[in-house]
Image 1 (cartoon, rainbow, N blue to C red):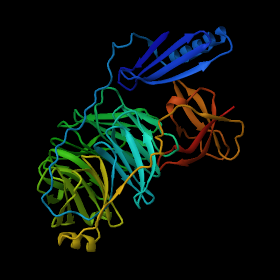
Image 2 (image 1 turned 45 degrees about the vertical axis):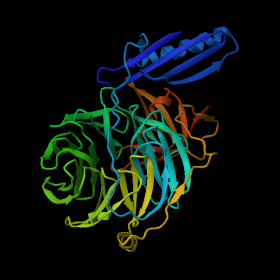
Image 3 (image 1 turned 90 degrees about the horizontal axis):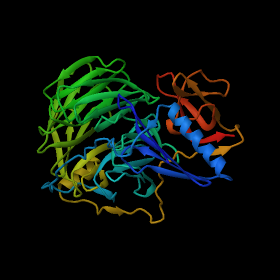
Length: 470
């Protein structure tokens, strides 16, 4: 048995790799230090071939920086489980159309025109149609911190320090966050990942999973990070700051919006939900306070309708609020299913995920809200996941193909001590491709369904299925 670890000085990797040879069988176990990891067993015709295959794998890892180690000396990364309290609302019941119990407290939600995504603290991610039918289920290795979108790619940030791409049939690790970063929240734009943490730092990582810059804020417990093309907005216990996206230089600070528990953004403004029982709207340009939305409890979450015409908030008393842009409270109603830890508004519906793990769809149309304020609400549909809906887990296994037509050919090339992936099919720019690091092998060629330029960045993202060309 050979046991190796890679734990870089900057915390960028914190992994182990174990190879065991038993007769003609080779067992490889790999993963994050301090965790059980994944296991792959391969049988060979002879003991000599098994030994040669094991030696090859060990050589590949040592060339990447892995070194012999003793299991148990290094500990797993620090993880903070968010501690929240929730009491029952005394307000009238909101008009909940349907609700789905995910099974554990849920922080992650994302809603687009096709479906709703919910991720909970057990690592389960479900997709639910707007009609309320559960359509898919993923099982990630650890609790889901949040779910974010970048163009049509969907990412889930997890307590295991990885950010998983959920855009394909199988989740694949897209980013690995330094082991010394105790993640609180994440956001992404044009492939640049922003990470806020327990110590009040903000860290950015580029599309190839490489560190860009980090800054330490003037407070701790950084629950807010929002990214746009030009800036990263960071909220913590002592306020909100804007940093330049390219080099991390500080642009402005606002200390009025302190004890930040959540963040949201629109085109010209950023919103901070706080333990001071208010949501603050700050101008992106100079950080000045544009409006304050007063609630009756700690604000765990907030969101807006397009361009901030209406502002929504969820407090620790299981109530949700709606304000007009100026700050006037329009209504307050109870969820009936816990306090909203994240929320999103789309097409007159407010989607929330709560402390008891419920994804709920609230009818926020004027007619439904008016009826609810008079005490008339629909009977919510309790959505159930089909017993036959098996969870799909992350994988580093890649199917093979002998045919390159019908897709885009990419190749893995060594550049110094890094393995890069570039498009080999003619007619594309000479840019790198965002590609799962764990399945890269020098000299290997892969066929993907397609590649797409990401935003304003000079790189491609691969989408669809990945097959190795043999």
